[in-house]
Length: 175
Image (cartoon, rainbow, N blue to C red; front, side, top):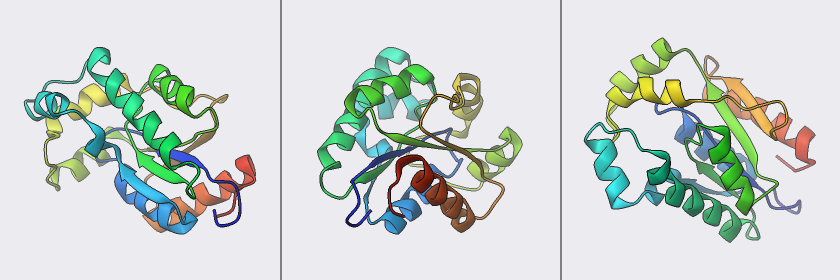
């Protein structure tokens, strides 16, 4: 981002899709801060997910506001990239209520690939049993939403190259 305008980017999607990996790499590339949205969950939400209970919309709303507030809090300081599931359009709209110019990155891939990745990692509280419910909830980015949907079959460096190029073309930002 450098001398260009600061930006807010949300890397969205289901667990195990690569939000944190891509988000960290993208933030480094753009000279922005990275925030893992998992760190913004309330203790109650963490407890629910750890027990295998999917979050309800009522559970998610305060968390989505916390994500939006994180975007606006860091927007003037060189930008921020936040990893946040933001599975539904209404969740992304709530985030856009905090920052109307937020750019979304949606890494996507078939559930079989993601299930394999989730099975080979350990997450602090997110059990693999919630993956199907996340796919069932996911509403892909729509054509009128600022951002990009990108396949996770490529290497993370290649994904970040594609995202940075699209980001520059959509926003005029540096990267």
